[in-house]
Structures are given as C-alpha cells and as structure tokens.
Image 1 (tube, rainbow, N blue to C red):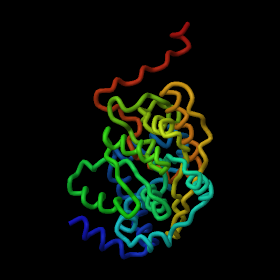
Image 2 (image 1 turned 90 degrees about the vertical axis):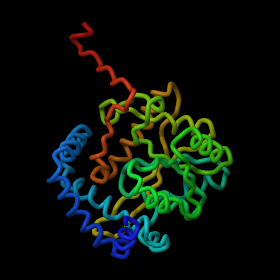
Image 3 (image 1 turned 45 degrees about the vertical axis):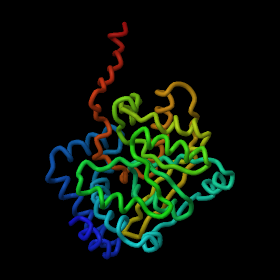
Image 4 (image 1 turned 30 degrees about the vertical axis):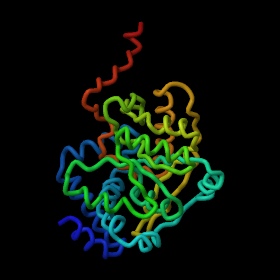
Length: 287
C-alpha cells in the first residue's frame, strides 16, 4: 500500500508538501514526549536551542517531501534543485580521482545522491529498513540510473573500495550510528558519540578526495540548493582522531543551516555490545 500512497502524494507541488510537513512536524512534537525531549536535548547540547521552532517544522518537511523526492519523475525533481560549487566535484572527476561524498542528516539528504547521479555514476551504502514494508519503496526510490546501492556489510565495503580504486565516487552518511566494531567514540557537539571509521578508511584506501555536501531546503517550498564544500581536515593519526576530524567537519557544515539538521535522531545512543564511554575525570578527581 505504501508505494501507491507515496505516488499519489508525489503529484502535489512541493510548496504544498512542505506546508503539510510543517503541520506534521508540530503534531509529532506535541504528541510525543520522547521525541520532544530528544530534539530539545540535542539542540541544547549543540547550542542551537533558539532554532527549536524552525527545527520542528523542518523535521516535518523532511518526511512529507519524501513522496516527491522518491516517486516523482527525476527530471521534475531536478527542476527544483540547483547546485553550488559543482566545479570542485568536476575537477576531481576530470582527474579520474575517487571521491567520498559525506552527507550528514542535514536538509534534504535524500536528494543529494539523486542529483549527483544525474551527472556521474555514484555508489552509496544502503542499510535496509527495519520494517519490511518499506523495503520495496526505499530500494525502488534509491536504485535509479547511475545510482548503485552497496549493502551495509563487508561485501558492500568491498564494493565501495573497488569503486574508489576505479576513480569513481561513493556516498556515505557519516553521522549514522554504526554497529559494534564499526566505530569509535568521538565527540559530536561536545558529547561522546559512537562514530563510524569507514569514511576515513575508504578515503585512504582509495586515495580519494573527501567532499562534504548537503541540500539546503529553501523557504516556501521553492526547492533546494545542493552545496558542495571542500573537506578542510587531514586524516592523520589514529582511527579515533580521524573520526573526530570528520565530526568537526560535520559540525561546521551543520552550522550553516542548524534548523535543518535531523535533531530527533538518536545520535548519542550506545549500540548493542558496545561499552559506554568512560567520563573524563573532573579536576578534583585528577588531583
């Protein structure tokens, strides 16, 4: 049933969907204490509490825009998107160098891979949804021409590595909480967050360039601007230091449009099988 429902809603104009999303965002926020608490806590942790009202609306938009992004014809979706700094991507493509696109849960992250795939082949890591009913909808939406899916397992990692070694780009969500053995503890907005080590490993293995990117949602349903930003960190040191460097890059990206980050995401959860980080000793304990 989900596929026909999404296709039905995809016919509506984007301004209407975003208006519906604003209403949905507030309904969810007011009706769910756990959702409300997590969003407020995460915003406060990052120092963005003043953006709460806007973040509530943007979270709703991120859900209601999915029928349009996933089910509308690609050419129609593309008419609502423009890009900024594509030249830095094209330079790497022309040089035959692999690219690791890092896209956090910021803005309309679902549209980023689709728009890149209109210009070049792109492989992205994909973790199937927990609800089986969502699988055909999401896989059908994401597996489009030039957009290839790699499973979130060792087979998928090998696929991504081969892609980079051939000088082709891949895409990852660096702020997704990894599973046991796939991450390290690194701070994210001043709090320990279990952070994946895969982006740095793949970039180094494939001698690839990292480019951070996100799609900023324009007001009034006017579309999206996909922004490509050079990665200004260096992947030296240990896996934990590399993860910290990437987290800092994500923080700087989120600072560009803080209301559009997915603050209700449980970024600080402790995965099964992982020991919680040991709190740093206070000054009194050190003495």
